[in-house]
Image 1 (cartoon, one colour):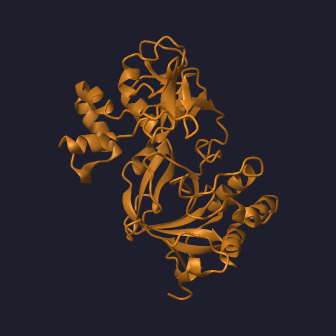
Image 2 (spheres, one colour; image 1 turned 90 degrees about the vertical axis):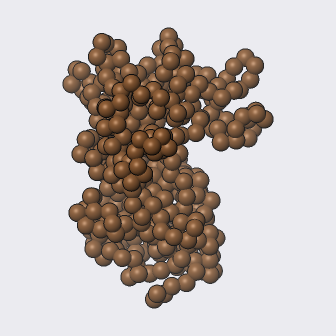
Image 3 (cartoon, one colour; image 1 turned 120 degrees about the horizontal axis):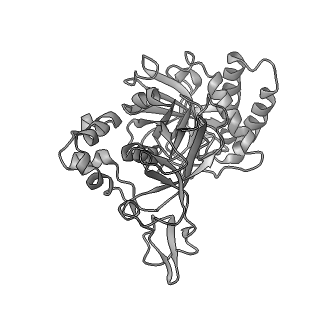
Length: 380
């Protein structure tokens, strides 16, 4: 391809060999995408890092390399002409596209997520009886400095006891009452399946009984491994792999209400929440990158590998539910998730509410990933 070379051949590069340097002309659909919304998403991260920097990912796109782009983005927000033309010029001036393939050398993979919107109550009632919990005081962060020898290295959280740190209560134990009576209930829902999918998505917009709106977002988790309900249902022969979507899982639960615990308790991971500001109602919740997500322009990535704020152009030829045609658009890495692992893997934030959930639940598609790498890393 024109201008194609290894990114690691550039004089100042410290990137993983998995990056393949291209030009913007080599990126399918780059000229057809409207990138101004992606620019505004990027600019929100630029504003955030002024006070609290992001951690750099292990693939070599270090946060310091974004400094010129972040400075320019903040300046553009105050300019009257931050339009589509200026946004495209901004990305082309400050970045170089590099294809990044999956670890096996093939295309990447995308799924979708959304912000559920359901009714809720701040007090328990006959209808609203399913709690979302605050983070417990005995749930502590774990790293190499305090990890007991017998605690799985995967665990980033543990339970503090008089005799030391142990694995925290899992989903089954909590559902059976392990946290009852501790005043940890943040809000109450009327449906266990809705609560489960809020756990999966990590955030929710809640319509309270007094007419107000409340937003909750991830605060911590029990530490146990995540096991999706879809995977369990496949292994039990209840659903075929190609049939698994959020909608098909919900339908199965509706048809088998007496087996909900059997399936959900195989996912030992449990999420704790905190209330957050509603913020801009047109945007999604504040996520891992500490900015509100932009529908259709924010993605969740593997935080260990990638640096928040990195722009990715994603080409998913078979994904038509978002744009009505092949999905080819610029998105910004602003979230993460325990199921999002790998260098060419992303979860696309679709938006809030039922319609967004209908789209997000059906996204399971192969995609090509083009990371926009700061020119400061590649010698211009």
